Image (cartoon, rainbow, N blue to C red):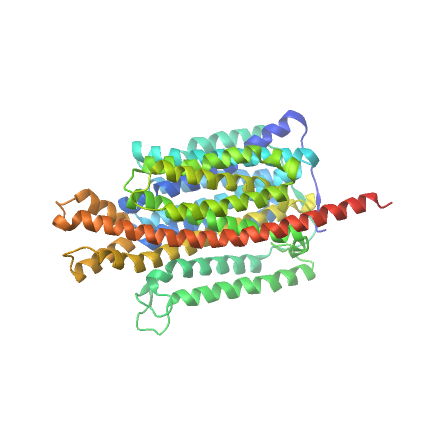
Length: 553
């Protein structure tokens, strides 16, 4: 082992109060994510964001989050987990203030970049503190409470985001983090103990940080920008720092970035092994993957995040633009998913006590898969909001069961002194999944729009091909926001009497494209479901081996 525990966990009432504070800090991140998803259609309209910028609002946050999680987990072990959490909360508040004042897409994306750094400091330090503080039966109870709190906040987020955007304006979805963060800071110093580990290996893994950051960043950039830059041949030029990637070049920048990202992530593994063999500090302890529960658990977390965040990216755009509902109603419908997750997350520990945590994860993934498929099958512009909310609540039941028990299951075999690395790695898997979920499912939605919109517009009588092409491009570029403008104009807009028919055709096309994107999300959930079966089998093997070891004199 490279580390040894340096501080004992607190006892009694203060220990449980610290759990609430830590969960509150993480809840701020969860709340922000769900609020931003609901308000995204409004931000697209107000700031004139194009499709790729809309993806980057979520994507840049997740990329930075994922790239820094491993390093921040190790940094928290060095400088103190509470210290780093406080720094993260402050940065998150600063990013929120900048976001609230954003006047264009670039400023908003920069603010999300700052928030991503703060979030990367908060998440691993909170989870590793819980893992190092609670032991035995208390740990199972703590993770159950943890999951219920997070699920409850996830339920509140869409509703709060919809209300703030509708009643005030979208900047308030970020300003709400300021009083919340201030309370967390005060409570942290009052109740959260400082925990750290003694680092016995020298140096900082700068090479690993660069490889992981460039790898994740280039991969997500290529996936998000592929639709606008071209998946192979360049269809538009790209300018950065005075350099122009011309459309006359034989290859688009997108596939090159994807290749660079995959290469860097591939090189990351032997580099980390080299650091370990040289007895130098590494941001990823690859020996943790010798635990089968850790390997399969991270795969499950990755796939669940792709499905969850892909759905959260697609549905708000569909509900507001294709269904024509307000942001508040969209938030109310999406809140059903969080309510379902809260209900199941609160009861997950009782199910885990009876059937075992790995089995609960399997059940949760099965419900998620069925829920995602049901949403895709019933999706239509004229669908009842109540029906959609009911199916999303069913999906949320699975999400709550899987999420509440997955964290403890992944870390069950990880030694407490490695909890910082273990929790940071698991969190990285989830955040990489979040970034790729927005990128991959967003790309599937963009591809679906490009395919289905022309087909639907062709059914509108009297619409010229040039007008159809212009409308299609505008709808794709605005992620469907132009549908609302055409619908609201009725017969008095530029399209005249054809306006309502065009709005209906675009809504139908967006429904088809959204359905395709949801099928893609469901595919990743199926992979996660298969991984959860392996996780369950390996957990049984681990438990059996521990029982044999305990009986051995």
